[in-house]
Image 1: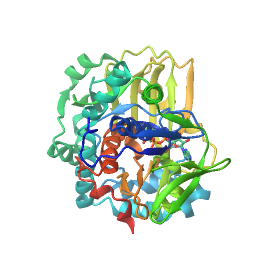
Image 2 (image 1 turned 30 degrees about the vertical axis):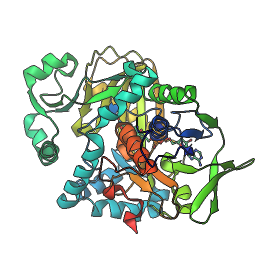
Image 3 (image 1 turned 90 degrees about the vertical axis):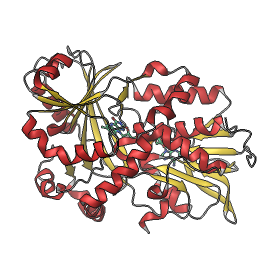
Amino acid sequence: MFGCFPEFVAMHIAVIGTGIVGVCTAAWLQRDGHQVTFIDPLGPGEACSFGNAGSLSPSACLPVGMPNMWKKVPRWLLDPLGPLTVRWGYAPVVLPWLVRMLRHSSRQEVTRIAAALRSLLEPIFDCYDPLLAEAGAQSLVRRSGCLYVYSSRETAAQWQWGMNLRRSLGVKLVDVERDELEHLEPDLKGRFRFGILAPDNGSTSDPSALVKALHAHCVALGARTDRRRATGFERQGGRVTGVRFDSGEPLAVDGVVVAAGAWSAPLAAQLGSRVPLETQRGYHVTVRSSNLGLRHTVMAVEHNLMVNPMAMGLRLAGTVEFAGLKAPPNYARADALLKQGQQLFPHLDTSEVTRWMGHRPSMPDSLPVVGRAEKADNAWLAFGHGHMGMCMGASTGREVAHLVAGRPTQVDLAPFAPGRFR
Ligand SMILES: Cc1cc2nc3c(=O)[nH]c(=O)nc-3n(C[C@H](O)[C@H](O)[C@H](O)COP(=O)(O)OP(=O)(O)OC[C@H]3O[C@@H](n4cnc5c(N)ncnc54)[C@H](O)[C@@H]3O)c2cc1C
């Protein structure tokens, strides 16, 4: 598409990380004619991009740290199975990060952050559609809308400020009264009496399959795969000339993109960008044969629970746990999601379920890091997408390709600058 741009130079670019962000970035770089080598010890879509809720939501522009959230945090922290918890041993490590997050939760900050997130979320489908079409993977994405549901209209009023902020940023939201809600989704009958429909939202029926399909298409077009763990870089002056690994010879490259999700910080630091990247661990439980016939993605707002009908069953996902990258999963949190699901949908058949934990790569301001590394002219950073990496993967990839090509970006990337925390 941009191959005839006057200053265009085709390069060999290493993309570190084959999650949704790395794979979409590689696909956009290939469209420009670059040679890509994927670097990842895991297969594509096997880390956080494996088991998420699969929602592709242009409406999801609110950060995690919302105004007045601090009032709820102490109660949450005391409940090890609550929506947000910190493992006690990890509390001293994460405390400064949490304080930072709360500092970004004023109304003024949330308004700024929401506008920035919306700029990457609004073009979700414009950025995914060409990649899906080329990979023949359109069937993995549907545009069926998302229902935010509440026990009553009065309860929904607690979240009105955020919903109005979404509306002010151009998100289409339609109030759905009880009768219509029951008509749209008969399985919600009884528990939920009010909803807000985001008709422009979509979802994927299998996030990992989506990543794998895009990756396979890149490989079919000539991308190479190196299944080693990147540990650092070879440098010459201000340029990266190679990627180093935990074993074997370095790989010579003309440029590098760090898209290693929650594991990106040590690599970014070597490129001059020290960033406060944390992991918000989240869980899912997938019910193989659910007895439910949901047609929309459903967000049960009071329960912080996302419910999505997927190819492999009904997925219930959510919660935030701060425990770092190394602690083993606490599957009691997944069981708690299942229990919630049983309460909300009493006829849910839970005889066959799978449980999973993933590491959301998270920044304290809920904005990803997208931009050139501070101390390398040919290294770019693309990570930290938190709760919205599936949503923002393709738009991030498009923007990184613009940066690599030296073209003007379509989104103002200033709010996502790697150096913003200095
Ligand atoms: C419960 C839950 C529900 C979620 N629901 C949604 C949702 O509905 N919608 C949404 O948009 N987002 C959702 N998310 C968030 C989303 O899953 C993440 O933001 C996204 O998957 C992050 O993608 P990524 O490519 O940055 O990272 P990952 O998918 O984690 O990929 C990073 C890759 O980098 C590799 N890597 C790490 N270190 C190295 C190294 N040194 N060398 C080489 N490779 C390395 C890893 O092996 C991994 O494959 C959810 C997350 C969770 C946990």
